Length: 560
Image (cartoon, rainbow, N blue to C red; front, side):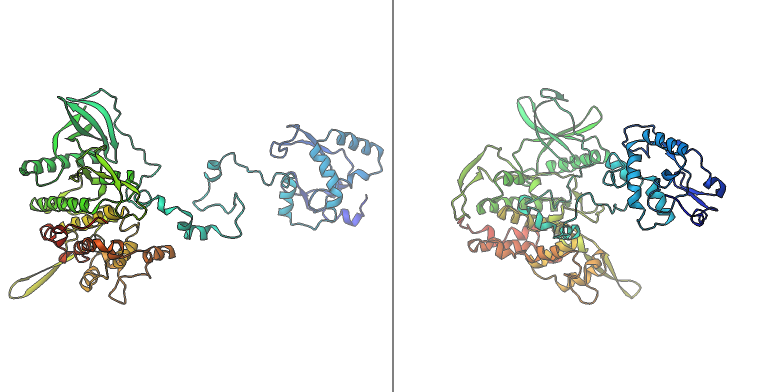
């Protein structure tokens, strides 16, 4: 195929070189000159998955149009035999990729014209259509190692036409079996991150911890590992704290508090765990030696399929815990972390009886502890009343409203014949432990958390739905504290549902039941006792001594 002279002179002054990737000035005489095609070695990028890694291909200097691929068929139609023979020899040595480009040249002749920048990409990456679905990176880390924090627009999998990713994320509760996560992993503040590496104390059966011989492992926790040890024929529970400075300091504080309680508790009225000894193992791990106790209330609930305790057992446990809180108040101590995990049964794991569950209509069997005696443990976060109060205490589900909203206390006095009133945010106090006790007792009754949440705003809304509206004194006091973010700016009320984060959060609050709806009619007295101690106003919440005088402890309630 030949070209007219005018067509050959269209791009004489500026010639585009597709292989070099830039514009190049050429003389018109060189373009029209019939010379042997130049040969060039291809790099690995050009010969992607080709049979010959270093392959020679010819390049004719004849005029090329701005079509999608260079038209080599034009240069093959010259009348010179010598030139045609050389072209033939070159084509016989070409690769499969070149033969495909020759066959495509006729179809590309009628292709629409592209810009020069587009021609560069189309000529440089000839096999792009063949390998367009293949990733340039070997693994996922290299793909995002040099990119920004924004996610890639490229989707590895085909996007669903029925439900987008954002919709699935906002309605993720529909795709989670919420009944399987009844208590901890999804909603607790102490959920462990997979990146956090917890290194516990390595033990062997028969090894010596000072004067104690290790028999077995009891359990693992955030602060350390509990081992069953023996000394002089008696068994003890030794808590080996992790070799972390903050945990070691907390263990020393716990040891001092427990020794103070032990010396003051002459008649065993505290119902707190007894600390026998404490020492440092090889100057690295702090060890606390406790009396041997049974499983925690949460462990018993978990092994019992969260069926709940008998009402008579709850009655006995509640009275013991109130006596313990009364003892701590006399010592000016606040526990700050009362929950089923920190309440242990005195009886062992095997000391239980199997009986029909009274609150079941199908007559299912349940386990009941042989004794309902309990002990309060974990004084690592306990503080004295005159010490510094941190802003946040408790596990979230047992946290009192004054911890979230704050609590103002007004002092009025005369100064130079002028009355001065000072407002002080005292935050939480002894009454916060009583709130945690009320949430714990309801969990022992139902087997599930009373406030299943992971957000402050949602938590406060659940309190209103379960117990009642917040008093105006609490709302007005919260406007001057850290709780102003949860109060409506225009009206004296909680900022709900305007302050909700999602529709699923509003739906969870609407599903909450009141205390009386959670309690059976024959146990109505228990529900009234829970409402009595779960007062939203901490200043009107009863003391442990007043709570022990409630009618709930004077009457024997039926189990059925």
